[in-house]
Image (tube, rainbow, N blue to C red; front, side, top):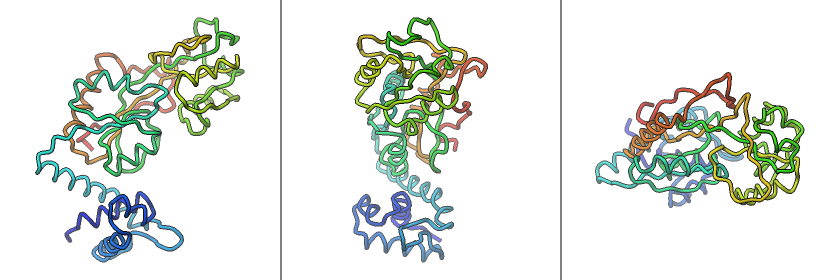
Length: 313
C-alpha cells in the first residue's frame, strides 16, 4: 500500500481543525478537493477516518492513524528540504511573555545557528503552529498532557520572587515562605484558571484570594498591582523589573518556587538547527547551573523528568 502524501496531509489538517472548510483554507484548496482526498485515503485504507454529520470527529482508526500520519508529512517535508538543499533558519516561537522568555533564548542564540523568532499568544496556539509545521520549535513553560506528536526538553528552572507593593504588610521581610501569603491577593495577568503556574501555586499554598488584570505588559501589570496594598504576584528572579514606583521584590524560600522553561518541538522534525539549539540549551544549562533542583528546598508544580532530545524520539 503506497500512501499519497497530499491525501495524508489533507487528513492531518482536517484532524487538527475538525472542520473541512477551515482545513481546506489552510491548504489553499477547495473544500470539494479536500473531501475527495479524504475519500480516496479512506478507500485506500479500507476504513473511515472521520465521522461526519453533527460536526467532524475522528474515528478510532483515525485517532490511531494521526500520529504516524503526522510523521509521514514531516518526513516528506524533510525529504524535499534535503533534496533542494534548503538552509532556511530555524523558526522558533515563544510564549509566557510576561516572564520574558527571550532572556534565556538570547543566552543560547549565538550558538544555535540562524533563528527566526516569533511571539505566540499562548501554549495552545504555539502547539497548533508546531503540529501544522508553521514553526520548528518553541520555548516557554510546558503544561502536562501535551498533544500527541510533540516532545519537550527541560532547559531552565528559575527561582521565583514575590513582588509586592511597598505598603504590603510583608514588604519589609527579607524573605518569605509561600504560606505567609495566604491572607494576600494573588494578582494575575488574566483568569487564574488559564495560568497554570499561578493556579497551581495558589492551590498548593492555600492562596484563596485572587484578582485578574489584563496582560498589557509587565509595567502596566505591576503598576496596577501597587494600587491595592494586599496584592502580590510572582516573577522570576532574573526578570528586569520596570521602573514602577512603590514595588518591592522579596525572595521566596522553604520552599522556593521554580518556573520551568522548556524547548518544545514536533517529533520527526529533522531540521539541523533544532539539534543545534537543543545542544546550545544543554550547554548553557550545565555552565550556568540552570537545572539545579532539590525537592527538599524547591517547589515545582510537577517534578522534572528526563526528556529525550531531538532526533532520539
